[in-house]
Amino acid sequence: MGPWSIRQINAYNLSTLRRSPLAEISGSLGDLGTLLPILIALTRQDAISLSSTLVFSGLANILTGVFFGIPLPVQPMKAIAAVTLSRSLTRAETMSAGLFVAGAVSLFSATGLLRRFTRVIPVPVVKGIQVGAGISLVLSAGSSLLLPLGWVTPSRTDNLLWALFAFLLLLALTHVSRFPYALFLFALGLFVSVLQLLSSEGARKSHLWLSLWHPSVLLPSWHDFRIGALDAGVGQLPLTTLNSVIAVTHLSADLLPMMPSPTTTKLGFSVAAMNLVGCWFGAMPVCHGSGGLAAQYRFGARSGASIVILGSVKLILGLFVAEGLVEVLQRFPKALLGVMVIAAGLELARVGETLNYNARDLEIAGGDAEHDDEDDFGAAVAGSKEFRRLDTEERQRRWTVMFMTVGGLLAFRNDLVGFAAGMLCHWTYEAPEWVGRIRRPEREIESEDLLG
Image 1 (cartoon, helix red, strand yellow):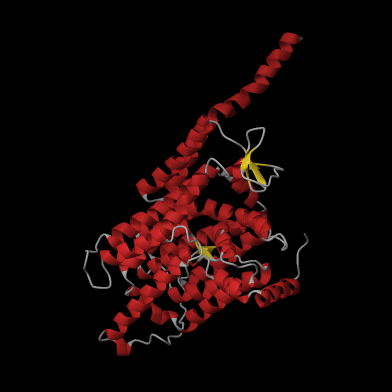
Image 2: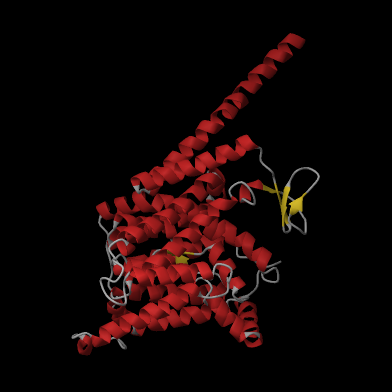
């Protein structure tokens, strides 16, 4: 399918919105389960500017909806967020991590190295970083948010009883995928926070409902950039190239075949542009993502109109309300936020489940089947794709590489260490095959001499 013009894309957006407005609005909320917990946690830690994040991510939502015409999410860079929360990185260090990833993705997109880079990084290492980032979020939520709480302290609206309620609700809604769990807890926590703020002595001085955005430029030092890039940025880079670019291209073609899929180059430049502009103002490092696209599609989104709606709301909040919301979010109950972050972390860690089946590197080219089954050649079939089946030894190797990555990341709380550990483990397993390839021509020459 050839590319569409901007006029065609927006005609499609408008017609889809007119045909099913409620589905588009519902779909726009599909990825909030990941966005809200991380956004609130980073705001409470003063690692980002809430107003700048809402303004620039809102603009990114609107522009991607207008130019791509699909419900393409703008979501946090989760590996960077996990390191920021677990190691208490400063705002400058967090922004430096986003700038590093954006610069690298921009370079890869401009030079055509994006696809080559994704081929070099093995899937077990990528999934290991994702699983490690998810577990880091869980550990951070437990240690910094839930552990200080008592059963009835520090207040009637923020204690372990509330955390237990949120956790039981999460379990009860496990099989109700369309219920906006994070949005419900966010609304509840926001209601409690506003009541506390209004009842406090300083409520009259609070400009909660109207507080204009005052942008300020952030200039990280070389020290900030080094820490942000090495500790958080390096681990995020393979996730961004694979999950935000390559996977989105394939998934959009599967979910929305009537729309032209965005190219990897365009998606790469989109990710780079969002961060090369917003991070200088303290905005949260963001990217696209296949998981967010799938979530918004599941909730009903079928066009770019859904994220244009979401982006417009975020932009208005960022321009006129966000500065006042910071004070509200500082009072957000830790009990509810802790469970929200745990839920987001567990959702991210779940990607490790498909390491040895349905992983992208196991896909058989040209596979075409209609049901999940097994064919005559032992290939695992999922939907319209076929996946190669692994023997026990290969499955164990892949698990070992993934968990070596997870172990290095968690032990040192550093994505770079986890990435290096996973790559070294992978290369150790690949070394005998490399040696065999080198020696094979020598054996062929010796055989020819003998025959001669």
